[in-house]
Image (cartoon, rainbow, N blue to C red; front, side, top):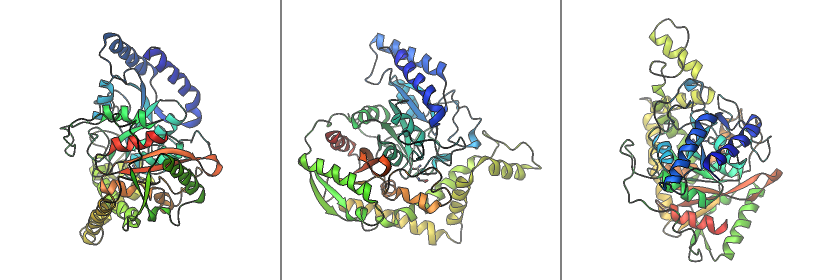
Length: 454
Ligand code: GLN
């Protein structure tokens, strides 16, 4: 089958399903098919990679040349990117075909996709449920087989939680492995792009193309390239897996606990040893995250001023009024809430009490993980405390919404790699995700253990 034929199949499926699921913000059949034909030429000329000709959906946080790139916001509803994010460029170079731009929470702030200016995304397993967020469009598109793979970004859980809610696999690599250049910034010291797909094997192939040093990202890591597929088939019977007791206490719903336990039983059959560990400071991950991430966001989002690009208010008196009207109109409620929190915790009078204290706790949380990794090779637990909730269920309760990331956000605070794989179903037959956390640069081992289950 040619890439053009394959791409056409996914386009047709997307045309049929997207009106119901709202997973894509932008589709451009002609652009996708043109790329597919170029990929077919690559294949014919022998310049191909294992990914050449395979379609991929791009989260709308990634700038893609000539494509509308909205980041789920009215603020960028007219922004056609003049350049490619490094992730997009690398996947293009590998010969992948951009299928379109996926829906997301506005500026990646959310856990349900309901903060998108383009409306909520539906979970293909149950259209009454949210797909998770912020990479909910990508997760929904892959779960509904509108795309074989997608990109996501993860600041506090945005790849892993939607992957769990939609029954697919997703990985947030070690901070600094995947370039942030052209990935619209939310909280720069947390943000990390990564792949979402059906299986660990697919994720490994995608990581091979996405990871690499980039001089245009000042926190990009310079390392020897590795092949993330190399350990897929290794036996796992020597592995010690830590189970943090804090992740199996109150707050975890019974149906998720059951599915996770069943997965552990499978792992025991494969010879894995489980050890009891503790992450004593992990209960502070959410409060620390919600001081630091908004602080960075308030600074990053100051660039959206109506002057250089994006939305600008139609009528205004003077410059000040133009800024104010543009930002009032361009940002949604959740984004404004984050800007207010961030500005507050960074303000002169409160800096020491909130921002500085949170920075210190961030270090303690990272130390917790390092202590734990003295006793185990990997850490496992649930990705999220419950299965996908209903659309609208947590909309007026930000704190409940934030708790969706209780197991994932500590990993971002520490900069560690984290992954979610599907391990069955919970209440209402909605998918459950198993969270696998590795030490820095242990992605291959994580692929290995995920593949052993799959
Ligand atoms: N749900 C978290 C938030 O709203 C994490 C989002 C993300 O990882 N981008 O900030």
